[in-house]
Length: 384
Image (cartoon, rainbow, N blue to C red; front, side, top):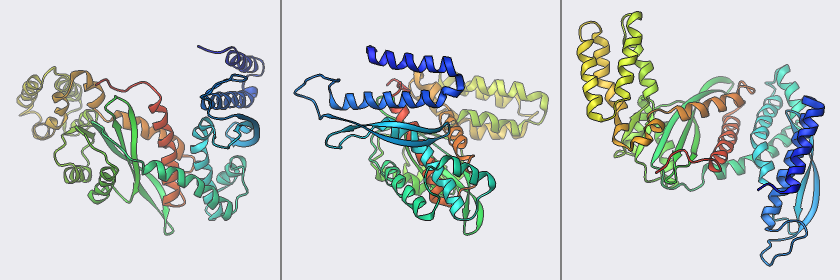
């Protein structure tokens, strides 16, 4: 139930936006963040203003002003204090972590002499600290400690694990190369999604995927019943080497796309896509295999390359049928990772080219950590 003071704060923000429109956006955000931090301190202490309790965790000690540079301008925030300094609002830290990582990436480019006019302008507007190598190193170090701890945190049992990679441009020894960003998402036994980990590698070769999977294993990842991914050869080999007994579901969306490369005529594409879709939507594995047999027979003469491909590959997209039917929609594709990759891209495209590998890992980790924290407090992804 919303308390009277919370209603008052919400009404004030609504009035501000109604009066000033977009011009009042910065002030509205400032008020919302201040109210979120105040409520977080209240929950931390275990008591409201002027309340008494033997179970309280401490005492409020006023507010400390802090100016934070954001994309809507400078926000003058009031950071709630506790007498023993044991409290710091996570509502502030979570919202600004990826912003800070982006600022550091841009500042690094500026300091290393590879900035453009655009980068210099963004740095001037966003950074909020003097752009010197000392200040940049200090800001990077503070972030890296938090993100490293998150990347190395202990894991647990995750029945379903999604794996994928995307590429970012990184400057290495004076040259710009495409580096692979490896990402793993897990669904826990309570049905919650979490980002399990990420890594930056020179490519998606087996050795890099194997190192990444072993790092998850060393962090006590266990209880995996199914991996969901595309059919990259390096990933397939690494998965078999590190988790040899765990079944694999090949992403049905990517299989549908791959199939079109083997269709000899444009006019056949829709009917082939529909036939493969019927196979994937079959209610049982037996029915899926029957429909696959029909496809192979139907196109044996008119599309022999399609038949050869389908006979070898479509079966890899049917592993899902061995799992609970109410999970199929969620575990038949790696689309959940595609959406995460889009969010990473939305943030990294501002930097365009990262000045070094650590800079790329820092920003990607910050974005993924925020996504994972949001999922953790949201609705369950699956019901076991």
